[in-house]
Amino acid sequence: RFKAINPVVKAPSFICDDGTVLMDSTLILDYLESTVPPGRRLMPAGVEARKEALRLIGLAMAGCEKGVSLLYERDKRPAEKQHQPWLDRVTEQANAAFGELERAAAKAGPWLQGKEFNAADVAVACAWRFAQYYDAAEIPAARYPALVAYSARAEALPEFASTPLD
Image 1 (spheres, rainbow, N blue to C red):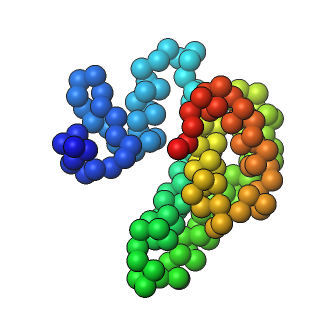
Image 2: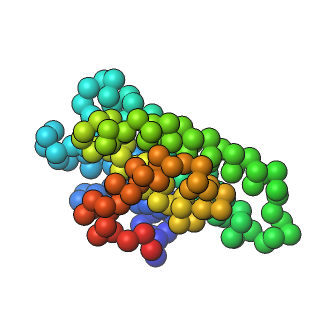
């Protein structure tokens, strides 16, 4: 059934009101952002703030993408076909992304770009939540205390609390 909606069978997919199918989280969010009034948008409008938000979102998406690679390699590929050097590389890449996000979270006040919760906060909180749900052994929370505290603040928001991961 998914293939009938999106022949590429890539999740997430979003069906627009006119039937257009968009895929990839960042593209879907960019489209949705354009459908709301400027005062309700989550992406910063200023060039420098937007650039920093995009940097943070890119790191979050990279961490998430590497987490998916870990999950597939570890849980979907037969053990005799798993390639340890690949697992090591992907684990290192995921931890590099979360290491950069740890530095950003350590400066959060209370959010990544100051007092206003924005799109970067959504992406980073979701990526961290995913990593801890699926890949906690490879991406240990003990290495990222600022991300743990930051995530707890985000998870306490009604928008997160009302949306269980599983």
